[in-house]
Structure formats: structure tokens, C-alpha cells
Image 1: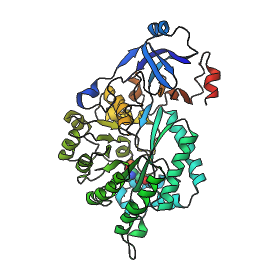
Image 2 (image 1 turned 180 degrees about the vertical axis):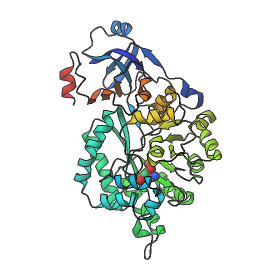
Image 3 (image 1 turned 60 degrees about the horizontal axis):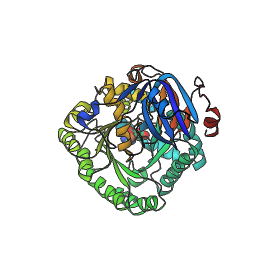
Image 4 (image 1 turned 30 degrees about the vertical axis):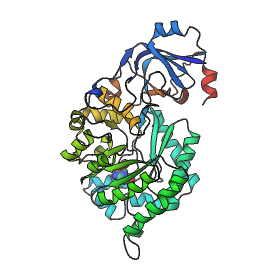
Length: 435
Ligand code: NIG
Ligand code: FE
């Protein structure tokens, strides 16, 4: 069964090595005008000029008319906190009056507010809340999404969050990767006698991580390594335990103030170091010399109203592998719109469109250990694709805040389809049956 995706204005292939692109490699993003894509068994079989492809596959079982639009690899959002209960719009307004993010947290709000709320909710309730949020994320072109726990901060509530992620992965066509973030904060009940933060760290390393690993509930472990939250020494211990149990490593590194977390990520060979708005020059050099993907989240700094963004140009020019992600969460980045993150990447991080697109596809996949599976439209890669209503890929970051994704597919199966996209020729039954 071969499906041909035809009548595009462009196919953005992102074709190249199946690993993170770094430095100058990020300038080269292949875009083929009026090309077509052949898909078989959920994988890309062939990509090329439409007439040539039609000649190679003269009688495909299905044909999808892309309506003269841009077909691209589905976006890979490698950093979200998508499992939460209530939104936190009060804090948004509070920050506008001058109360900082860390100040809100020190008053028991921020992450702590989400923790109180999540602990009180059932697994079913959290699942029902996450479903429409993830559908909105998918509607903007995301086909792979990483989801973190981290609003539980107790063994039960962390495992509950991770079970919700597992159920979402079974319920949705999205490609979903789970990350354990028990070290998102030190919970309030471990900050005063008789309990200590030391005990909480012990709980993470001795109880949570072994159980997460035994039940195969997460691929990665993450930590908020930041002055006022976890120190690099604590991160070393917690991530050491995670590694010993077979989990990949991620860090919220140098997000607001900075303190050597990027250097630690590079030293540990973490899969990614995320945020980096306050990374030092030494941290930039360390990341550039490492295999750790530097994941930038410009939506967070925008939403927090901070002037400072991560030094994206310095990172790329030093040779680092830069990825982009949404950081979708109720406190610092409540956006499901990944193309908007690409806008910020161009307008505020000074990336070229090629750099931004590769950072949101190939390098997002690398930040999840999936660079050989998804992120590019090349033979052998998963047919994870997004169709954008535009003539040229440069419009993707240009129409900022707009909603241009009309359809997406994960492993060739329809994931999202907007009302305006009904032009599946000869394939309607196939597409319907897979929804
Ligand atoms: O990536 N910095 C830590 N975690 C999130 C925010 C979580 C929250 O405020 O709820 C972030 O910015
Ligand atoms: Fe985050």
C-alpha cells in the first residue's frame, strides 16, 4: 500500500544525517519545490519531484492532494509540562505588577500551586484535562511531544502523572515521550522540620527513580538546576541515580540566573540542556564541545516578560546543536503554538528560517533520542508530517500567532485535520479508518 502526497508548493525535507545538526550545518535545510512524498507502512519511501515520483509509483493505493501547500516534517516539541490541572493566569497578571516568578514561588505559589492542585485530582481527571490540550498542540503541527511529570512531587502523584502520559500515548496518534521530573522543586513539606530536603532527594533517588524505571514509565529524567531550586551537586546525585536506572538525562539549565548547569549537562553527556537564558560563556563553550542538545524556549522568556533570551547565535556560531521547544506549561509558557516559537526564534533569537526549522524538527528529535526515527522527510524515516497553508516555508515564522496547520500525520496516520482540509482523493476511507 503506497500513498502519494502530491500537489505541494514545497516539500521541506530537512534531509541529512540522522543526528543533531550543529553550527553551520543548521544553515542547510533542503526545500524541494512542487515535490511529492511516497509513504508505505508508516514510513517515507521516497521524496522527489512530483512527475518523477508519479513515474516511479504509477499506481499508488492512495493519493493525498496537498492543495498547493507546504508539506514539512511534523514539529518535534521536546520540552513540555503538559500534565497539569488548573491554569495559573493570576500569576501572569501579578508579574505585570512587578512580582517576580521566584517571588511567587517563595510565597507558595508557582509550581507549588500546581502541585497542590494536581495531587487533589484523579488520574482520569488529569487524562481528560490533557487530551484537548494535546489536540490543540497537534493542531498547530506538532507530531512528537515530550511530556514531563513534575507537578506531583510525591511518589504517588509523580507515578500518577506518568501513568497519565502512558494513557495519552495509547489514546492519541501523537508520538509521545515521557520524562520524570520529580526534581522540579523541593516540595513545601520537605522544607521545614521534621522533614528535610535531603530526605526528599533520598526519596527521588531511592524510591521514585527505581519505580519509574521498573514500570518503564519514562525515557528521561530531568531536574530544575537553578539557584534557589536544586544545586549542581544535587543534580549530579539525582541524575546519577537516573542514569544508573537506565534513564536518559535532561536538565532545566541556567534558566533565570544561571550557575553552572550547562557545564554540568555537558560533563554528564546529558541528552539535552534546556532554557539557557542565563548560560555563561563557559557553558556555551562546554555545550558546543559536547553532544548535548541546547534546547531553547523563547516563549518562556517572552511570557515571563523578561528581556533576556538565550544566546542562540553564540551557541550556533560556537558549534552547538540547538533545538527549539514550547515549554508548554501553566506557569511560564501556556502556548500550544509551536510555529509561534519559530517566530520568536527568528525575531528574538536571530535564527534564520532554516536554522529555526531544523531546530524544531531534526534537533528536537535528537533532544529525545529520536534523530534516526523522525524529524526529516527522507526514506526510512517515519511519515510524520505537517501540512501548512502557505506557499513558502518562510511564511511559517512570518504569520506570527496564526494557525496555518491544516493537517498532520504520524507514521502516515492522520493525526490532525482542520475543517478546511477535505481534499483526500481516493483515500478518504483509509484516512477515516485510521482516525
Ligand atoms: O520550564 N522552570 C521550571 N519549570 C517550568 C515552569 C513550571 C511552572 O512554573 O509551572 C519552566 O519554565
Ligand atoms: Fe520547562
